[in-house]
Amino acid sequence: MKLIYSKAMRRIIILLSVLSFVTLVLAGPGFSENGDIFSRVQEHKLDNGLTVLLLPEPRAPIVTVQIWYRVGSRNEALGKTGLSHLTEHLMFRGTEKYGPKEFSRLVQQAGGNLNAFTSKDYTAYFETGPKDKLRLFLELEADRMRNLKIDEELFLTERKVVMEERRMRTEDDPVQSLYEEMVATAFKAHPYQWPIIGWMNDISNLTLPDVKAYYNLYYQPNNATLVVVGDIDPPRALEDIKEFFGKIPKGPEPPPFRSVEPPQQGERWLELVREAQLPAIFMAYHTPNLEDAEAYPLEVLSLLLSQGRSSRLQRRLVYETKSALDAGAFYDFATASPSLFVFYGQPLPGRSIETLEDLMDAEIEKIKTHLVSEKELTKAKNQAEAAFILRQDSLFYRGMLLGRYQTIGDWKKLNEIIPKIRAVTPEEVRRVAQKYLVKTNRTVGVLKPLKPTRPTTERFIPHDQIR
Image 1: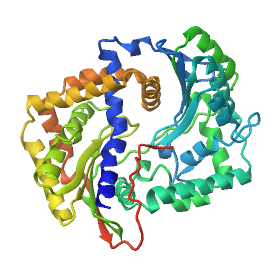
Image 2 (image 1 turned 90 degrees about the horizontal axis):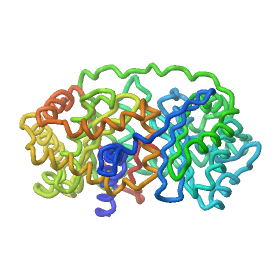
Image 3 (image 1 turned 180 degrees about the vertical axis):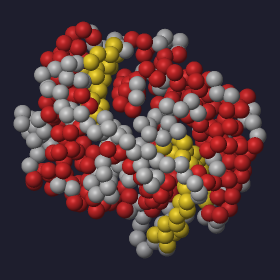
Image 4 (image 1 turned 90 degrees about the vertical axis):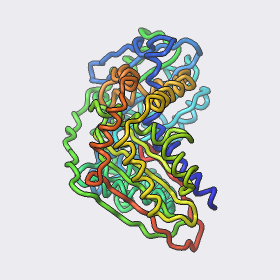
């Protein structure tokens, strides 16, 4: 069971930091030897407000179609959390033209694959498959943008599915529960405080009229971005898009988002006592998003601390002192609102959570008082660009980058990331650590295990998005 739990904690790096890190490394096409692929993006705006991004890539006869709606869990309200994710589920349950399961059957029959995901800031749907099926993918997405058909029976069935999903991912998982409680404590005014999947009681009380009202407000062309990447002829693709999406009328403008988290003025601390194999700890600090220039040194700091076995937290806590099964940090700057810089750790059996916290604090103090060496800093930057090389052939991730950045702000920011990361200095890394990694800006969550009376799953699911 020790190894199982260690792997669960390790997923925090693999899953929670993956969107931040992949977002960084995949920005590299604009600065690789292959040329600036983002300079080939063609942006259009239909009369109904739909934003269209086209990126031709003829190396393989494949196309990916992605539709990104500017609606996520941050657009919900207390008492109705989970609406975004439940709506995502229901989008696969049929329209007037295509019945339940027909959408998936048609895509798979055409040799393609499909899925969707919900995040704090957006909900996205995609199909990837042969280029000659582009019109099919466009027709299907345009149809369900406005023609979703759900009856009470289908709604109740899908609501039960989501409740079971929450039960498996969080209710039965002590590490996920701790993370959820920590985030809910760190935010007190911003809707980032609640989980993407929603609170269980809220989900159980959602109604079909709730979903219909939410769908009619947010699933509109003027609240969406359509991304098409692959072996396409852009003028022809745009004509096809206009054929299927252009006839959809512009919808009501969603209400402006106004929530702002006030500055934290003192350390917050919580303790979760429940059945678990081993204790765990999270420490979260409020930090800015990509709109702030300090996001770039913060991203480099997260790589220094937690990217790979030779990173500071892994080397010191796991290998040198043998105090932790796993330890690390993650930071996601590609969010619509400022979010969190999070440290995590799990002590080895027989080692205390207090000792682990002290060691983590010591590493934080080192980064605040001593300049990182140019060698270590260069290594962190090079890791980002090297990782991009391994992924630069993925049409899907190129589309994902374009859709995500356009939804939270502007896709053109992708061309700024690598130059700004390269420009980060040791002094900037120390300055942001001194500014943000302070106890008055910190929320600490500790898991104190009760002896399990039954097996615990102890899986960790990322909060950046869920499918």
